[in-house]
Image 1 (tube, helix red, strand yellow):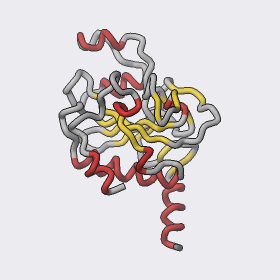
Image 2: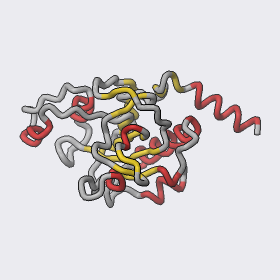
Image 3: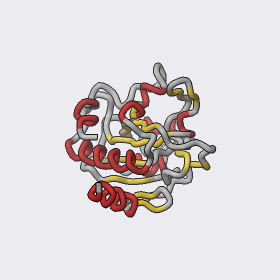
Image 4: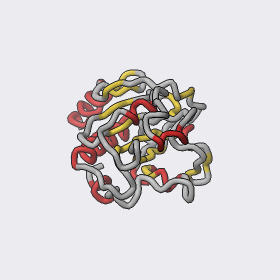
Length: 190
């Protein structure tokens, strides 16, 4: 029991105003206040810019509102898009945080979970660098699992049944994290 309390204190110590001390902090302008809603959902996404390309600066630039939409022809559709996630995990496991967990990031869009619409109001969004079919790296799974365990300690309403893919809350509109994401591997260590 004392070990569990010490572990919880250690986890909470790494957090300040919804910011995780072990993540590289990259404050996005794309967020707003949460309504009076407790965090009770975790949404897993994937992203790559351009599609299928990894290790480039474009995702970070997109979430910061600094993407040069002329840098690649595929970016034209992103002109004026205001989007963010709470966290982003690169292929090498690097963790970036764009929005405080106390605030509403703009990651889910039109969405519904268990009959409740507007998932951004009560969720946290984690983006993995990848595509629906690319598969994800061991470093990404390890970082995601560690982060998820800590989030579950901070936000007691988060439990395995409330961890979903973007496709689960926006079916027909979104497909991520896709077939390349190993849910069994991920949830086994959470």
